Length: 151
Figure 1 (cartoon, rainbow, N blue to C red):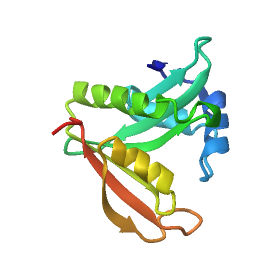
Figure 2 (cartoon, rainbow, N blue to C red):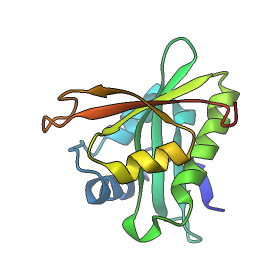
Figure 3 (tube, rainbow, N blue to C red):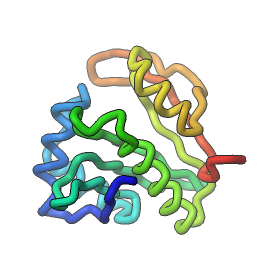
Figure 4 (cartoon, one colour):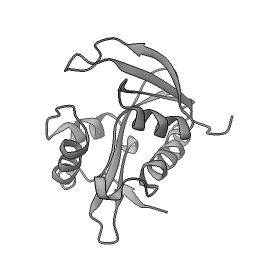
């Protein structure tokens, strides 16, 4: 089981930004985490090691009609495939339930089969292809899941 805590604005931004630029291929501004925090503090969860150093995170925003949208989920390369990503998603589902949400959506690059398989193993299903969704012109895939994992 992965250790987790709430995001700390101004303190975690640099570490999370480093994780983002080393694991994701989109370009983000360093203040993106504080921006998401301002929109929905409970949707920002940080996975940490035993020394409280971030190893991963999930950033989400609350949408209308009982939906949440995962904006970013990333885990340091050396911590991948050890359960941190799934633990982050499960903790996020708990926060979504506490906020009375019913469903979660996200987008992932169409050619990122590893991430798509990860999300499918964690209860998401492919909804549709989003042509030219990403800044580099590549296609995305929208994936949705119930907040309740086993419905």
